[in-house]
Length: 262
Image (tube, rainbow, N blue to C red):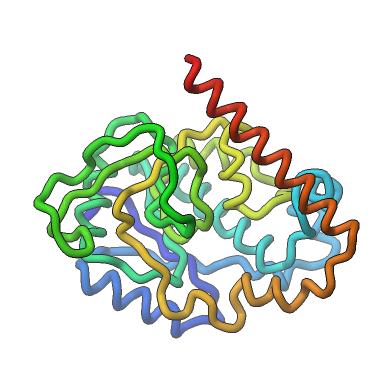
């Protein structure tokens, strides 16, 4: 069991997801606390400008944020505040649509005892295998299976992985991010992909101890809601997408080059 508290973000309206997440963690003997997610669709209209900056969004992201994305970000912010106020040096944050590999307890224990060369460690990546800037052992073991009997590495990916399915975060990092998060203008995982703007050192675990669960793309997820609200993109939207992509790629390559030059 990890020495850091483990939290599972779960909407009150999704008890089935919580039941599956509970079964996964109980199976591995991992104690956790359920954290009631913020329902972004229920934010009052007069409260929205305090938590969401539509003008900044137009400048900084490729599409307006929907209620589910805003609520997701606010849920993570609330958990960062809780971790920052706690006694442990950090915390583990899981979204409720994960499936856990048998390696998860050993990985969480190792991360809680690891040094201070990172701010956040992602436990899952939706992206394809990519270039790594650094790697070192995290859990030592014989090769095998899904990584449960085998080892695990902590790596620095060239590009920060998409999704916030699960991650470890240090207490001081949680306090810093929570203090500067509002109002939001991009989804939380997109903000972390722009790690240079936030001064974040983000690592990943390989092989990842989490994978998507069977409910990750069910009706009601952010991805499905986004698809339903998208409609037909015109030239203006296509131009916004392109500008965002070009700015991101340029920023990523520039800051990785700066790091390599040091």
